[in-house]
Length: 539
Figure 1 (tube, rainbow, N blue to C red):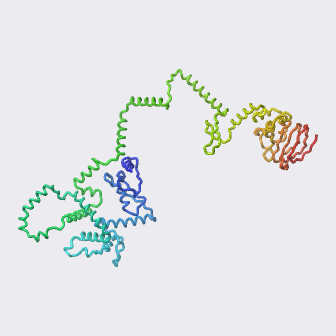
Figure 2: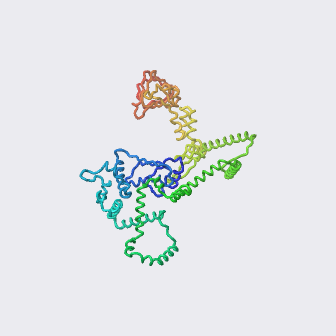
């Protein structure tokens, strides 16, 4: 916290310091502020007074302005009212005669029947102590000063309300305060040394008898005080109370009332030997070094230091440096391009051969997974490239019967579906699945899927708008699939090759072919199933 206060007091860039009024008052010195703003008042006015005193510490040279933010028609008005009442009571009890009830008497006053409306006024306090204005104006000359009498009565009333221990503690505190004031009183008599006291005592013994002969013992006994120390303390207390009442709590008035020695001590502590924290001293030292260093800069020293740092970085491997010559730039560029191409080809080779994938074991489930060392990707399934490479190795080991699916389907694309592709399907179960792959099936869109509005250039592979288009490019033995919906055939169909027309096998009513012409089936074989149609067959 001390570091924050020092930065606020010495750094002009920091213009605001926000803290709670209940944060510790000891050591909080904010003399760098000349404005105090209370935006959350406290029920205890002493807390707010302590908070605003943080800006009035020794070292403050500017006028401090106090602002308090209060919201109308809220609990804050009640808090402010109660705080004022407590402050008035504090003034009555602690500050004695400084309180002036003339302003309060005009606003509050008392009723005609003598009833006191506010106990926090001077009349209210007199009513509590049982003191009236007539008693203050007593005609007895032996009564003394009215102010002294009211002070004694006030102390007696306070003592009657406190415990014995509290009263003793109060007396002790008053005595200590009086002793401290006595030490700084310039008018107090300076105590003599012990040797001077002994000499004075011997002289007093020699002349004591002569002085007593000419005096009345009874008069001496009457004139001698009972306790000189208590009398001095009372006089000091009266003098301090009178000084405090006269000067008040204003800093300027207090400074004017100080003696020259006290003023010198105050100036010495403020200007000559003030208190500075370690943080402030280090900051000032750093600023001075920066200012001194900014005036003269040793270029040679900076270059040598930079060269030393680069040499250290090269030795540690953090910096790569070469002493290349201009005539070697072309060769170095070619070497760089060649190395870059080699790295790219190596990366592609690892990707094609599957070397970038490694199999690892999951630490939590103890199950195997595949991890890509280059991209950091992790998957549970076997990568596609690894599957293809394993199938290739198996085909090389087992022969044509274990040829991978992808190249085998690619080879069968060049075969006629009937009878070549059909003959391949009897080789093995694997070859049969490849011969009947879904890639060889030709699809026709129904009217509901916008067949008539589709552009042929944007059609997918083996997808057609009408049945006539599909039959025009079909090969012997091809399968033409009809999706659920309606198909319109206006000019009839000519089927001159063996094909299979397949619709919905489970519910043929979902596929409807409406034709206005006839179907001419000139192919040697073929069939149609899974559709509902009105067809006129002729051969």
